[in-house]
Image (cartoon, rainbow, N blue to C red; front, side, top):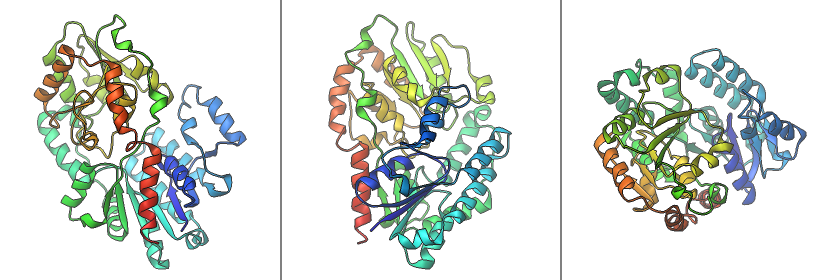
Length: 403
């Protein structure tokens, strides 16, 4: 069986396409703005990726997929990016992009393949088209159920009203689209157990859900030696969008309460104007802002522990990147960290939203920091499960169940 894979943007779809190709399962990969890795356009994207304002082009290069299988529909993606930069409402822009993208995938392409894989909020039309022609539709759900996020944000409004911002309502059309995806999917694949549990809590049959955690290029982020003892202050790193959903307000409260005399907290990620105005001036706090993904290995190398107190995720890839760099992780069960099934020195779990839990975990690290080499050695046991090859192997096994 060969599969049609469709995603209007990026996320981890390029990785999945590569893994399906490795298993001989990829029929066609339809996406938005993308460049074949051996083409002249990819070479240009690599060069332009270093220019101001164009730092994301190299993420559009698709590796390991034959050019004949790669089909790019860039106009809709470019139009959506332009509208978003001009301040248009994101739900409306992305919903319109996703609708047109799904409609543009040819019927002949669906008919040639034995199944289709789509992604959350961009697969409802594909699911209906697959049902009409008798093809199984697989939904890759990259984040937990939005109903869980709505409950989390209501609680945040009480504790951190400024950070929560104005309450927004998901459009009815988007809610319906997701319901169609869930109802028509032959299988729903999620990155972590937290995402699975939120789907089950909303009445989705657990028998159709599969947990398939993501992977990481372990060697890419590896740091030789033990630079943590390089005569600088201990340094915590937060990596991700600086938002309430990522647990940043609780992290800042914990840092204020911890009040370390000689330590630093780095925030690496996009900071909106409203959030930047809310950031306090605290000793040791450094705001890096958005860091290109290609530069993150260097950031991990300069830090000693990752703190990801997120309240709502699918699977936090930065956890694996940090472990590959030898950084212990302090996180919550809502990030995928609980699925590592690993304790000290690799990972400390704290209750989501708990300032006290963060303080205890960070203080414990400051009092007895594990050597980077020890963390790397312990994390080596995870390589067999949390690699892109293992991710692809599990997808292949799932697809072959239908044969």
